[in-house]
Length: 118
Length: 110
Image (cartoon, rainbow over the protein chains, first blue to last red):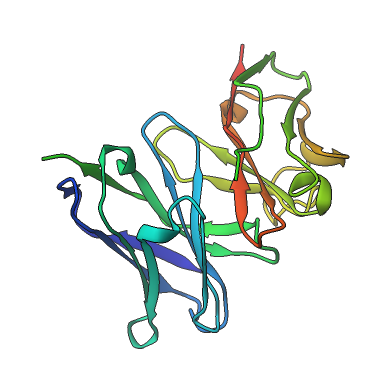
């Protein structure tokens, strides 16, 4: 059973960089695809980006200029960095495992709330 | 990429059936048989209930079923139970090799 756990600061100042880590257990990040997804308070889900088993990535076009997703296979972790944040980036951030197709997210972390505020 | 369109809310009584629609375009829903559905209870992470239009993951009740016609996918829940009250989101693969979600539908069991 794959398990995911997000970690990182809960508060980030405007214009700074949001950094989160997802720690994976029960599955190899080198043999599956992974994703970050966010949910602003009281709103819907927004797909952020993929990390492929090759280490390649694909990003939401609306976030691409500010976004980096990377991995540390030795720690079984992958990370999200979102630069120049604003209040619009306030959300619960989830990491998830991609299932058989790229629209399917079959295992999710519990989510971590990140607030952008001075 | 624009979010898929879902009704904001639906409701039903215990034992009834309800259907939630998810409308996209030929660049996402209509172009592929790759639509998933997620159930989200308050302050919980989403849970996959349907994948590839009409497949149920292990452990998901057979009261959940999916279908697709053109640019619209649908989730049907039969024999409605109180525990089904939750938010439901659809997702689709897109022609840009990305994913897109619907805006979400709040299901109330009255």
